Amino acid sequence: MLLIYCPYCQVERAETEFHCGGEAHIARPADPSKASDEDWVEFLYMRNNPKGLAAERWRHNNGCGRFFNAVRDTVSDKFLKFYKAGEPMPDLEAIAKEAGK
Amino acid sequence: MKRYSFLELAKNAFSAHQNWGRQWRAPEPKAEYDVVIVGAGGHGLATAYYLAKEHGIRNVAVLEKGWLGGGNTGRNTTIVRSNYLWEESAGLYNHAIGLWQGLSQELNYNVMYSARGVMMLAHTVHDVQVAQRHIHANRLAGVQNEWLTPEQAKEYCPPLNIEKNIRYPVMGAALQRVGGTARHDAVAWGYARGADDLGVDIIQNCAVTGIRRSQDGAVEGVETAKGFIKAKKVGVVAAGHTSVVMDMAGVRLPLESFPLQALVSEPVKPAFPCVVMSNTIHAYISQSDKGELVIGAGTDQFVSYSQAGGIHITNHTIDAICELFPHFRRMRMLRNWGGIVDTTPDRSPILSKTSVQGLYVNCGWGTGGFKATPGSGHVFAHTIAKDEPHPINAPFTIDRFRTGRLIDEAAAAAVAH
Image (cartoon, rainbow over all chains, first blue to last red; front, side, top):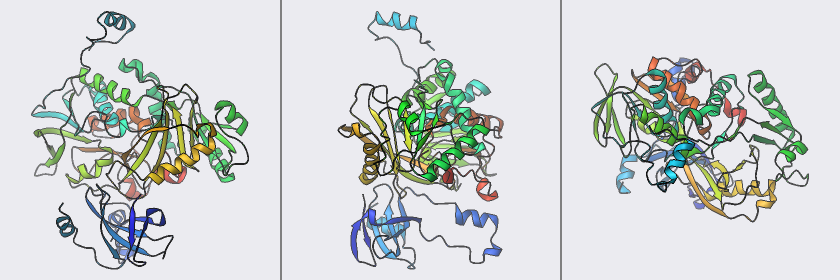
C-alpha cells in the first residue's frame, strides 16, 4: 500500500483513494488526421515501462477527483516528486541524482 | 542422461539416494552460439529444448541473471487451462494442453500435470451470459468447456458455498475438465534436464547487459556479466523484464510490468479437489500436492519491478475466498510473494520476430503464462529456427497493434488469466 500526496488537496492519503492512470506526458497526436499508423501505435500502445524512475499519472478518485503527476522509482516504489497536471515533465536524471541513485 | 525409472529408483535406494548425480551441467559460456535465449524460466527452457529436439539446433545457450526457474515460473499458481474466448488463443493454449498431457513421458520427468478440472464461477446474470457465450465459443473452437448449475458445481467442489445469502452468490460455473495444475518447478527442471542432455548450455548468474548489433542492424550477440557472447539469433523470453532487455536493442514494446501476488496456506490434508476461479470477485484457489492452499491475488495498479505487491490486494482476494469457502476462514497463511508480469494492451502474448534481424521476442503473457509453457516454447522454437512463425503463433505479432487485429482477451476475461 502506497502513501500518496495529492498536490491539490495537499494531503497524504492511502493508495486506495487513488487510481493510477499509467505513464504521464503521452501527448495525443496534434493533428489526428495527419498521424500515421506508427504514430497511433506509439500513442496508444507503446510504453517506456522503465525499471527506475517513471513519471506517471494519478487521479485522486476519493478526494478532489483531479489528475496529477508523480515521479516514482519502480524498483523501490518510493515517490520522489508530486506535481500538478499541466506542469512540464521534470528532469528525471536530476531527481535521480538528488535521490542518490 | 540417466533415465529415471522404477528400476533406477530401486537401485538408488541401496545407496540412500546419495548418488543420483546432477540433472544438468553448469558450463562456462562458449564464445559463440547459433541461438542465445535470454531467460531460463519455463518458456525459455522449453524453447531451447524444442530447438534442440525438433529443429536440430543444439548449439544453444540459455542465459539467466538469477537462478533457473526463479522468476515467474517459480512464483505462479500452477494453473493449466485453455478456455480462452478467441480462436487464436484457443489454438495456442490448446496446443499447450496437448503437450501437457504427454509431457512427463516426453521429458522422463514427473511434471505432476493433474487434470483435476478448472471451474470458473459466475456470480451475476452478466457473468452467466458471458460464461455461456464463452462455452459456446470454446466448443466451436474445439476447446472442452461445460456449464454447471450451482448444485453441480457444489457436487464437483464440495467446499464451495452456494448459499444465496452471500454478497455474490454462485449462479453457475464453467468447468474445463482437462484443465488443472502442474508442478511449476518440475516443468522448469524437466525442460532444463532435457535441453542440457541435447547439448544446450544453461548458464545461470549471467545477466545480459547489452544486445550488440552490427552495421546493418542485425543481431551480433549479447553482452553479459561473463563477457560478450556471439550469437546468430537471440530469443528474449524475459517475462517482466522484457522491456528492459529489448530496450538494449532499441526495440519498443507495448508492455507494462506489474507485481502480481500469490500466497499459500499451511499444508493440510486433501480438502480441495479442483481449481476454482472467480473473475468477478477475483480469487483463485487450488490445493497443491504438498497440501497447501495455493491462492492467487491480483496485480497492483502501477508499474513496478519490486516483486512485492500491496497487502490490500491480497486482503481483497482473501475476503472472496473466505466467503466462497467458509471453512477456510481459520486457515493460516504461510507465505506470500510477488512476481513481475508483463502485460499487453489486449492481454494476449507476443511471440514474434522483431524489426531487428535475428532478434525474437516471447513476452506479454501477463498474469497467466505458466499454462502455456510447453506450447509457447514449441512454437517459439519454430519461429526462431525457421525465421517465420508457426501457424499457431502467426497472429501473436507485435504488428497486430498497428493493423488493429488485436486478440482481445482483456475484454473477454476482464481479469485473471
